[in-house]
Image (cartoon, rainbow, N blue to C red; front, side):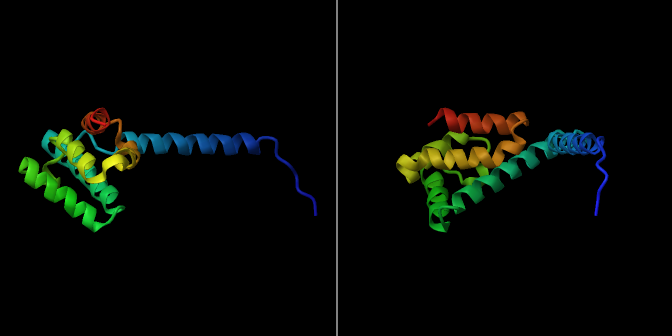
Length: 133
């Protein structure tokens, strides 16, 4: 059985892939719609960070997550839900709880937030965590 090779098929496939890549970038860059209010946008960014933070901490186990939350409460009078506004508190507590493996947790958080790093408030959050290390 013979197949006719279309010289344009590679070009067409590449154009389709390029179009898909552009659509994916467009989707990521528009993840947080500009039509929502500033308060809603802030709350959405906060929710994203808190979700990623919780997932990253739970990778080490629920006990570690609870230790971080308890340490935040004891030392700073706040919990995980308040940490978006004070990432330096989180950084300090992560150093205490994780010791020398602190950098691994920060890298995990950074990696999981990378699809949202174009959002200035999320980017600032990660920068504070990294700067404190």
